[in-house]
Length: 458
Image (cartoon, rainbow, N blue to C red):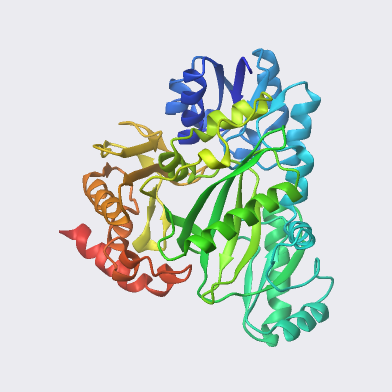
């Protein structure tokens, strides 16, 4: 078993990893930027190392600095959390070369699946159904037009190294293709250092479902059920839940089998998420694999009772999975809300500032992952996520009611948040029925914001 782990991240995920390490009797080292000198993950650390200035490039993306911190403090492994270097094949390789264990998939797997066009080809060859589109990266506008004409509009241009909605452009007619391709390439180059773009058929009004998988070095892979991530804005997830209330047990089984098939095709190791698009017709298509722990992993944890970070560490230590597929039992219903420091009524502008006062909800079957404390500074340098609120219920109805109650109890003074918008969403009839898709929030944004503003003014 690993003895000492450097946690190469910040905020709630750094604290969440640290807690599991402590419960396992593993020492930890935190890293922090100068902007995070007073951050909670730094204050809770038994040992912490400053690795650079506020900008991510100078700190949490500073590979030499992080590796040096791990070596100088006697660590034998690095846990990257999510974001930053979690899906960097280069960092995984450098970690291995330094004689340290990277707690995540193998570098070659990260590289293979990080290239979205390559991942599509790999999964197609493995027998998974992929969204119709270009066979590889687009070489010209003419090729893009030819593929789009063959599969039909609308289509989606996607950065091969992309994620989080960046490097994507919807194209509804041929006249939009040239400008859209140039724009997608520019954004992809700026955001990911790779201007490669491919094209897919845009599936209208889909569900976005993902399957959590775990794979050990002994050839075993299990899947832990689906998460419905369809409530999103500009391809950024807002609320996640499990199980999806509108799919049959047969379809659920097919999705799980496809996820395991994808893991085997990629020679997967560790925790990962296989993402699918579910069309209104009931057909589902492979979309991508996220080679890391997900922001929404607590949804699966409260349903299964399995600590996914513990499993990551055990797998990296060479241990077998803690349970077999037959032993996986999903109990009840779970929902997660992402609480962001942002102003929905001002175009979702980030809202940095000082937390003057806050109250986090509690009670039966409630979990809050956060790095907030009274007087803490929410800086403009990093993601606006300030808390994750997770509830569990014996039924979906119970979980929704519990989440509403928790959002009512949530108080954050000093910065704007999206709590009001999340609360309003959970009273929408379509959401209550589970009958929503990835366009739901955008299509109803004006009405949702109106209700949220009225509620907050009372």
